[in-house]
Length: 237
Image 1 (cartoon, rainbow, N blue to C red):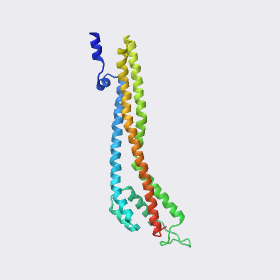
Image 2: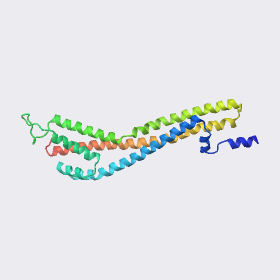
Image 3: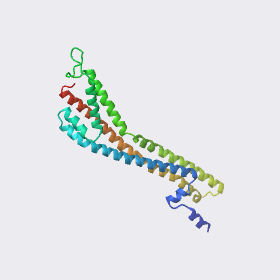
Image 4: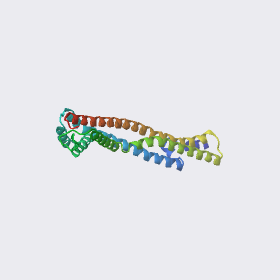
């Protein structure tokens, strides 16, 4: 009879392990569940955002590749759906309209090309706009890296505290066999398993979106260089 009671008291499912775990371990599991929901929400949101940006930019970039003059691209940017590339181009055109090229005598000459310092200022303006677009798209992505690194530590903390409580319970009850030790250790280890299930998807998500972000940053910088090259072909710089 005691053996049957002991066998029935041993958790046999993950749900029972969670329900019979110590309060500290359960608190850690709740925190891990919240972090998991947050990380999956970030990954879903970023996947939809990258998809939306790519869809909005695809048509604009195709028309930009076929355009030969700035006026054509400017008209296209007004018709196209708002996207990072059209905003970078609009920022370049605003700078072009606000800048007064200097003639040979040092006075403003609207028909003359921009000076070297003005071209460098244009490059800085485009870099600033590119960084702003990148930062907007990178929002919440670093939190995936934080969750991926912090979750295993939280799980380890829950496991250590759970094992300590299990051994203290064994000491209070006076039972020292393996059957008395194993359930408490198993209940404590559920925190580590839960932490890994949170950290692994978060790390994968962070690396995937970080690579997408780096590729987007490079493409946006290349687009800025193409805009400057188009200005140079038209004698604006």
